[in-house]
Length: 81
Length: 427
Image (cartoon, rainbow over all chains, first blue to last red):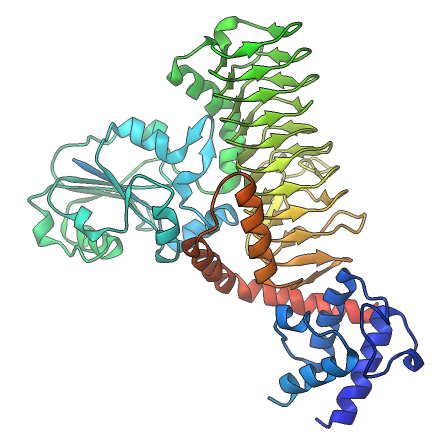
């Protein structure tokens, strides 16, 4: 999968789960400090990314990811494994 | 004669999940003692060994005085091998005599008495191998022995078993401190308060309908009412609890709120208000404030339980509460449906509605869906902290056992996770 598609879909899911608009989301956006993700929403984000990309991320590693850009790179590793 | 406890075939053990995920069936409680203590007392054995599933052997070895999975114990003496599911009360098999294998109609070995003379003729490389060769070459009979078949059998038998065990213990009287004013209803002969126990003022112990046994160092806080039959294990604390009839509470528990005809294995907390009825709760469980389980359906029909997450099993009883595995935590206000199965190492954050009847082990139930939460590493860290608070150690062997349980329970959990992910994105 192309990185541009992963980026687009990552942002879409982030907006759905955290109830934010796409213009608020940049690769530098921190899920917690910029987008307001609470711990339970972080768990939901991991589940939503798993579903969106049909992957099964390691929960502990995934929850270490802090920014949207890092999430895109993290997901890319699973998608293009 | 050496007694060997044998932890049944895996498919039968699964009927006792989630409690038997982390222990052999004979470590489960009914009445005042575990099933093993009852079997050993019945047989009168002093030389005892056991065989458990390989994945829990190292962990279990640290928790028992018996030799575990040691094939050397299968030689050198007459053996009486007993399946841990056999009910002690009806186990009247002679400990000595010619070799004999007692099996169920479907071929499960309930006991095998094997003389030392016959042992060299059999394969003794492992318990399964020995039992298979014993069945094949020794006299075999169909045994009419009662067995425990599901966890709820233990819960439903608990009140009667408590009364029987109190008689067997043969103890009554007050060895601890009972601060006044206090009220003991019924006969003094139906009450035992162990050494070091402290009963605060304004406690009612009602032994009118069954005996009450408060073990050593139990602490009962004011405004607690304890109805017999009841057993409270060593160092447990009752905090203004409405302790209805038929409860077995293991050691080092903290119990408040209303509890009825339930078994709590030990080291678990139900500190606050909320109802627990006809439930079996494992170790290191924390039930958050106002956690409540239903144990009776509104139409009074039999309760069903889903042990494998797919197929409901009719319990044949109108009263069955929750089965809750070790290390599971519920958040405040959790409402558990009638006959709920809550796996081990699970974490529940409620939605305000009754939860699904099956929550897999190692799952986080969050916002109405099953997720994988923060992963098992965080759960282990929490378990380590919880155990250290009670001066118990989370060991490498313990972790290895839970790693194995994580893998064993993965298929069912993964199904639930997939359903949860779909549901989440559909919202």
